[in-house]
Image (cartoon, rainbow, N blue to C red; front, side):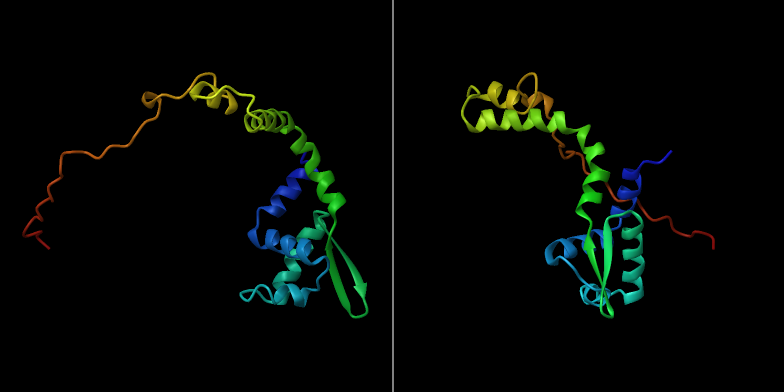
Length: 151
């Protein structure tokens, strides 16, 4: 059974829809024609279809103001859809932020071991652990072109 966050991620996978959300976040409420002006390669009907997808996922709401229909981000719906998914990763971020804070406050010992702990590694990285691509010393000779292919 698909979750609400699946629909949200499916809608957000499209770069045009993400840009529409960015514009709505920057400017609060916009009409289709105002949004279309930001996308010279799309016609207004294309913007309307993207807005329809955003509305179906509950990320955008529309209100009528005279003859204009203004679109806004529905921040609560976006938060509600993403919160359960993000909550699974919160412990990882919390631990990383705590390590960063400790490093910034100088609570980690200096040197490679301290940096390794700050990055969540068990031991410092050595040069042997980091593979380095090396150029081959042997040069390849060009293959001779066969003459008389018989065509």
